[in-house]
Length: 200
Image (cartoon, rainbow, N blue to C red; front, top):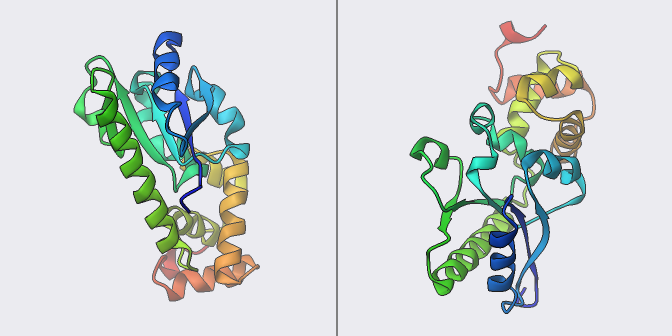
């Protein structure tokens, strides 16, 4: 575990700030910025192949209509911690979707300490959640499946890609051991995730 490199993705449009953060993190061998994106759209194009431990995001690149579904935008990175990179006023309502904040005026040591604390929190949570228990998001998808929704409808309902829906469905099948929609519906009913009246 001590030799593990924790992967960081930075979503920030400013080249100067990006370069500064890369220089700041470079001496710390356990932390590595693996990719930099100017906005969320470019990130979501590559989300299926990137598995970061931490996302450092300039909140201003997430426009207002997407803030309420930030979880969905980064849905393939449920174990990943989101950090808001602050250098201008951001309304508190927008910041509630992040696990922590970094102000670019903070001292290097304070920034690194925050990153390291988040990394260790992520590791602990990952170890604790390596069970067959469904995540909250997987339960939401299971409910949609039990209601008879197809992948396209589930994607639209939860503001996620079809690829993400398929990934969740694979995880649900793996964790429950149930492959059929009928079987998953029964599972949802038995676990009080859905009421009989909601089943089509």
